[in-house]
Length: 328
Image (cartoon, rainbow, N blue to C red; front, side, top):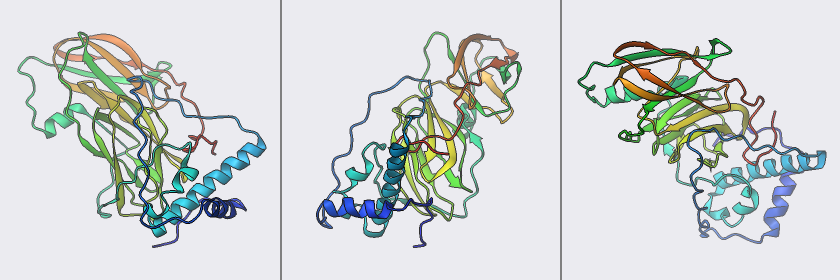
C-alpha cells in the first residue's frame, strides 16, 4: 500500500493518538464493532441543511486540530490492521462525527470514463427505462434560473409536481458520485428518494467522503484508488457532501420525491419536453442559494417558457470538517 497523503499534522498529534490508545488497554483482534447508531428522524423535505459551525478560541481551535489529526492517524491504523481489531477504541476518536459506514469496499474499474459535472433528469431516466410518453398533446417547457434578473450562471435544480399533490412515486435508482482530480463528479446530482449512490475513488490519494446533514449523516472513511463505498439516501432534501482530507472538495446531492426533475446546465438553463398540460408547483434552487423557492405555474400544450428567480444567499467559504471544525 502506498503511504497515505494527509494534511500536515501538528506536533503532538501522534503522541495524542498513542496516549489515548494506550490508556484504553489492549485490544483483541477478534473484537466486534459496537452497535450502529440509530437513524435520525426525517427532516424537512426540501431545505438544504446549513453546515455546522461554532466559533472557537485559540485553545479550542488547537484542540480541534489535534482531534482531527488523531482521527486521521487512527483511520490509518485501521487500514493497516483492520477496523475490527480497533473497534473498542473507535468511539474515542469518532465522537461528534457522523455515523461511520463500515461495509467492505467494492472494487471499481479505474479505466471507467469520468462522470459529468452535473446530472439528474427524470425524462432521461424514463427514456432509458423505455417508459412511453403519455398519449395526449404535451407541453414543452423551457426556462432559465435567474439571480437579480440575469442568468444565474450556476448549476441548479428544477422540479415540477401536479398542484393537486397526486402522482406516482418514482422508482429509486443507482447513481455514482466519484472522486477524481480531487473533486466530486457530478458536483450536483439529483436522485429519487430511496436511491443509492456509489462513491468510487479514482485518485492516487485517499479521500474521506462525509455528510453532516441530519437528512443523510454518514462518514465513508478512508479508501484508496480503485475502491468504493455506497450509501442509500432515504430522506428528501438537499445534502452537501465534503471530503475530510480536502477542504476544497464539495458537492450536492438533491434527493427529491417530485415526479419530474432536472439539473440545469452551468448557465442555469433547463427544460422538460413532455409534460401533461395542467397546474403545477415549480421548485427552483441554485448552488448559490440557501433554500429553494416555490411558485405555481400553468403548463399549456406546446411551447411554454418560465424564467425563475432564485436568491444568491448561500454561505461563502469552505465547509466545516466532519466534526464541525472550521477549515480554510
